[in-house]
Amino acid sequence: MSTSSNTLPKLHNAMWPGLVGKGTDPGQEPPISLEHMLELTAAAEVNGQKFDGIDYFLFLPHTDPNAGADELKKTADLIQGYGFNVGSLVAPVWPGTVGDSAMGDTAARKKFLEAVRVACRIAGVFNEHGVRKYGVIRVDSAEFGVAKWGENPKANTKKIADTFREAAKIAADHGERIAAEGEICWAGMHSWKAMLDVLEAVDMPKAFGFQADMAHTYLYLMGYNAPEHAMVQPGYSEAEFYAAYETMVDKLRPWTIDFHVAQNDGEVHGAGSHDKTGKHCQADDPKGKLDVVRCAGYWLKDAAARGIQHICWDGCMFPNAVLESPKTWNAILDVMLKVRAAHGWKS
Image (cartoon, rainbow, N blue to C red; front, side):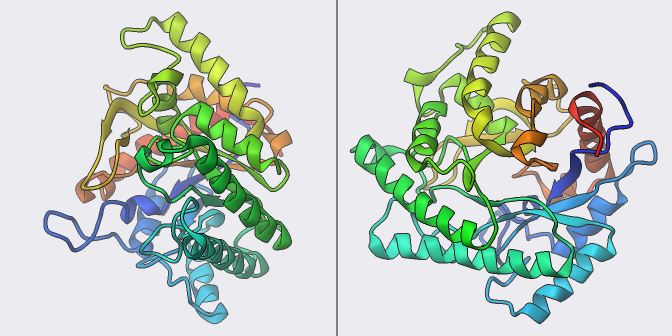
């Protein structure tokens, strides 16, 4: 369906680009507050159309995971005051937040599950408030790098899947669904094949699915961190690319319950102990490897049947000057609107 009158999926902007890679360490830029990210998102406008909502990371400095209901309701009021809904929530599963590795020892996995409980509690407050009506709880394995996983792939995949299955039960008890974001830096999720193995091992499709990010899944195609699962090689032709892209998406789309529109320039980068990870680039970056609108269509086929009601832009690790420029958000909103016009549906 191709019509500019499509009303779904709703268009969301992520709040975490104001936090990811930011901090107080030497060489780091300061985080951008939740309120300022909301202001920047609300200011974007293309042909009279605006963002519908936000997706949201549940940790400091944007959110205290231990905040009480009253404080969380004030945050919900703030978000709603900009005319936004809340969609998907990112559980604080990583070491140094609430959680720890899904592949770790008993204590680490207990922390991971506690992070999921925290996210479900906060989701419940937002749901009851009315600011949140759709979306998932987002996780990953919280095990950065693939070396340790590679020591025993079968056993470690099982361990991650077991943790995810317990997390899915917690979410289901709260009326929530969990989506695992495939990204090449996360153990057991670092290739399309490894991700599919985990999803099939969890085997709870109603409660646990996949969050597809266009930037990260492009690197799946290229086989970064898993050359044996590459589907194209550098110098690929357009025909080779789209044949491979369709093959990959067909494997993961049935599991996909949350979707990030994003662009990638084919580069990977890491920091400190972090392994290679995907590099988002701006929506209109001339070095971008993806025809964003065309590629999004492969993921959004039958999206409504999988319960998807919104899509979210994800673009991390940009300088604050880029994030604070109105031009950045207008370009993002413009491509999001084009995705909805080409592949969306009417409510």
